[in-house]
Image (cartoon, rainbow, N blue to C red; front, side, top):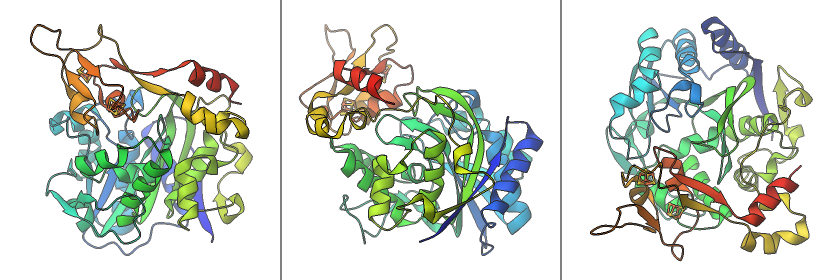
Length: 383
Ligand code: SF4
Ligand code: SF4
């Protein structure tokens, strides 16, 4: 198989710089397929109502520049959307805080939650982990979709890029079912199941300022300086993983599972990188997320999976007792103490599968991702 990924450097979110970089990356990737009719949906990553500077969400200047490209190249109407966790019901706040409302206004685009219009049962042909998936009707009905992820680390999947961004088109129950196991391989297959329902026609990634460390909610912004584009999500994610410092992106379960299904590259040589050399991509000292067991020598990995743990731990001083963590937990492992108690959430360790959804969705950072001794050791060993 052969794939093309367009790369353009971009040092900041200045309007002209971003417009230029997005146009260059798209051209270098061979251009967007010009078969769009009707409305084009831009699927941004709007995980939570966070300011753009936190690098949790796709930057509004990148979303604006993508809308501009779509308008100029395809002459189509643009709708910008995402489906943040069901806990963020105030979607007006979501689009305001992420400044997507301003980006949309500048390009005459509409915007709204992917949940409007409801969710539909999707076909399960080719599914490996799930027995069903409910996907946003608005997404399924869009004639053309441009995927616009933010490059971030992810405590569970290691990378949050093109493939992972499409996971956000599924409803809450489907997402919970994907997370209800300790197996990272199963999670990767479940995410690919969702992705395979309807892969977007094109992908443009905001890797200008990415998130490093323990993403996707509480990592730190890190300047990486690229816009990536292409028609194949796993290939664009492969380039993104290289930016993050992965020598072999197939170390990431999601990309390994995509390769095993014949959906993505198996070898770097299958990707034609246009606009940069491979050795120009890695950002020195970029802090990867998780992957602690992978850092152990091969012969120790079996035991490593049993010893290493990254589990939720409450910081009562930060907790506002909103109960969101209990509502997002896919296995109902969190109890909210009541009565004479303190109403703080309490994690039942025997039920918890360490998916860290509670950590990801906690609005105050009170549900920390606690690394045990072996996890900290494995992190130190990582090269
Ligand atoms: S830990 Fe976070 S999500 Fe859970 S109740 Fe406290 S503040 Fe809310
Ligand atoms: S308690 Fe948190 S980490 Fe454990 S299963 Fe529930 S959401 Fe996942």
